[in-house]
Image 1 (tube, rainbow, N blue to C red):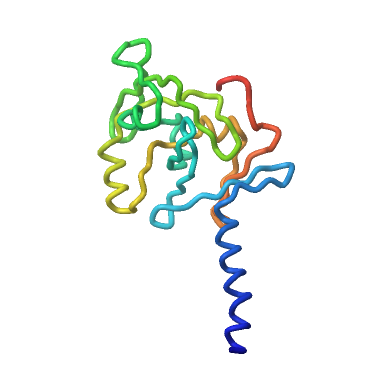
Image 2 (cartoon, rainbow, N blue to C red; image 1 turned 90 degrees about the vertical axis):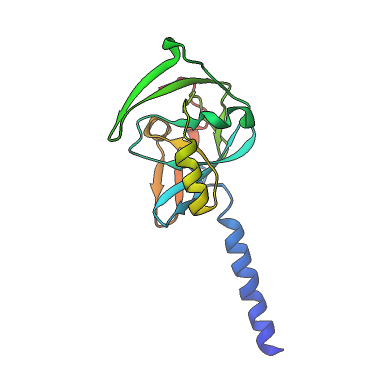
Length: 174
């Protein structure tokens, strides 16, 4: 019984510590948002898209933020059709791909409302492989456009992303 009494406070400490990692913290000067990793390497961040919880890969090498066009109905946003005015061609190591404009795709990271419309692409193949392997549904990629605009810093050791509290809602698009 004596050992049980000693273990109980430690158990409470472990639970409290685990619960804290899921919260967005504010130091007044910076907002800190926790992330998880895929395979211990690739950061994935919990966001909301039109009020619904979603996961996005954080990719500093991606020049634009992209959402999976296949989940547009599920998350309540629109993807422009094949109109040439709404289409952008993007080059990558794998070749070129078309990205489409989105409408009414409101992304929040913690309390930060991203004032920027992401591009859309059909990413079913990539996302289904991630879901099969890592058991998590990814709906997009958070690119350097958003990371740099909101002055976000990635701390891999603490598994957090921080951004200045004063940038909670920037008014203009990049």
